[in-house]
Image 1: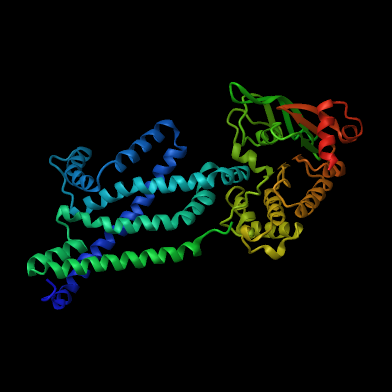
Image 2: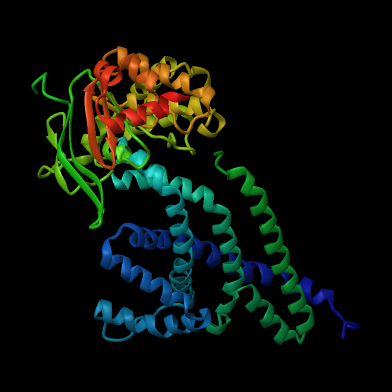
Amino acid sequence: MFSDFDFDAILRALPYLFRDGMSFTITLTLLSALGGLLLGTLIALARIGGGKLLAMVAAGYVNFMRALPLVLVIFWFYFLVPYLGQWLTGAPRPIKVGGFSSALLTFVMFEAAYFSEIMRGGIQSVARGQSSAALALGMTGGQSMRYIILPQVLRTMLPVLLTQTIVLFQDTSLVYVLSLTDFLGAASKIAQRDGRLVEMYCFAALVYFLICFLASQAVRRLQTRVAIIR
Amino acid sequence: MNASAPVIRMQHVSKWYNPHFQVLKDCSLDVTRGEVVVVCGPSGSGKSTLIKTVNALEPFQQGTISVDGIDLHGKGVNLPRLRARVGMVFQHFELFPHLSVLDNLDIAQRKVLGREREEARARSVALLKRVDLSAHAEKFPGQLSGGQQQRVAIARALAMDPVVMLFDEPTSALDPEMVSEVLDVMVQLAREGMTMMVVTHEMGFARKVAHRVVFMDQGEIVVDAPKEEFFGAVTNERARVFLSKILAH
């Protein structure tokens, strides 16, 4: 099987794999992580200090999202969002949503559920005495959250958030179900076209492994550097 | 504002954690301007809860509390603004660990009082000097000893120019050798005429600077007496037992 392993096939495919594939994967990962963190933080805040109804809706959302397989959610959004857009804008026919926008929206919504749990845990562990101190100084609840609680939570939780982002980086490969060309999708296309399945999938695995492994090591190193001295 | 009106006036304050557990029972207490009131009592007697009702960190169900003439339960009362004028020092310091010592002192001055950066900084620097911590201005709280942290916490509260200072067991989380450096700062503050309500077991501090001593037990204010009377001839049996216990060692 390895007797005719063709390194040249990989070399020839490199520009396409990285310029098209990897740039897509990284863009999707970073935007999803950022959006997921923002939305997730809002959800966490809603669950903690948003009144009974809002807290219930937020909790329901998180539990619902976490109970569904990601692939299902990707499909679901892809087919649903055009109709949702039509209904929202009152357009005469389903609106056009590109594969990328649909995938991004899906990952933001999906990751928000996970990020919100991380943020919620962090807020609860920091908040008790610290928010008393902030309130006693005359800060409003919002100021206390913004200047005292969230900065500490973000620093404490940064390693966990980054680790979740590494998982997200791997999960973005599921966009193949929408025929989008991420890194794995690009490798797969070349593999089919050139009949170089072994080369391309081995190479893709190696690249995923290297990136994730190095990123994890970097997170570990970062962990000690950002830790708050207590 | 009437100068002789009490800074803190608590009248018939009661608080329940649940219908079967009452933590504060009909507590009434005045603290007048320039007065130092020490609150003591066995643990679980409700003294920490009592002091936290003063700046509304602990809600209460019955009675009234007014601070500097403002009713806590009054209509449209601006709690943040009211709290900004009430300094509080916590048992576990509660400095902000992600901010430097100076930034701990600056932040509420800037975000709450709206002071300019230079003005806040100047005030912070002066206060750090006063608690003898100028050398540690750029450090983070985690790099300081407990006694130093508590002195920073006192400076942080003073930076807001409070009309009254509340101390909730300020020395009970400290190693014994650090208690006096914190008490020294408090004694000096008292001698300068700061209005203070202090929950503590440090009877030496009470003897030195308190005007009145309040003894609490099981959520009730059992004794509220001038210092001389309290240490001289306290008639209440529970207070006597408590005093003999903490003065024994």
